[in-house]
Length: 212
Image 1 (tube, helix red, strand yellow):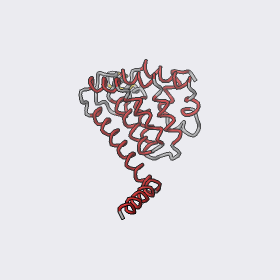
Image 2 (cartoon, helix red, strand yellow):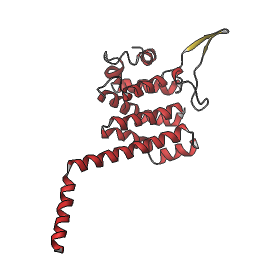
Image 3 (cartoon, rainbow, N blue to C red):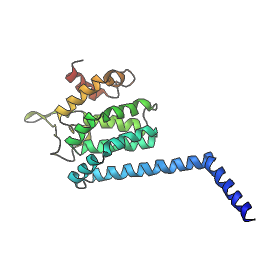
Image 4 (cartoon, rainbow, N blue to C red):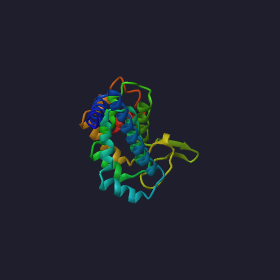
């Protein structure tokens, strides 16, 4: 009797192991756990929790690369959190982390997420457009005293309006422009007829720097 019960238990475990519903439920749990971790990391940046120690932890443990690698799971929800994470770094004006993102081609990873997302207008599409809007330099504004620039440098002016741009130093931004051009993303994305209008403001500065 005991032997029969044991065999029946093994049979049930075997059926569960191959049951696609169990596999799907497990995948959903893993995806949700991944999203919660990304949201937690994002909140640490937004809340400015000991920015020096946080940056050191990120760099020592290659957190930025590991977050970028989450795009390999091809999940729209996960990719939204990936993009939000890097948006938070840009908005925090962390020049060292932004330079690292350029060096490790993380912006290229974001553009690959953009190209693989076939639904224009969804949250992922909007998040990526907003990220590049933040990268766009702040435009000069007219004041009573004349024209002045509202460009805000990195590491020195937190909480600037998102729509004004100026989160990234121009030398870093120009380096990014050149990297994107060298890797073919200028033609594939920014000057592509399907997406050119989406990146209109970003494109204007990109053309000025690259003279195209």
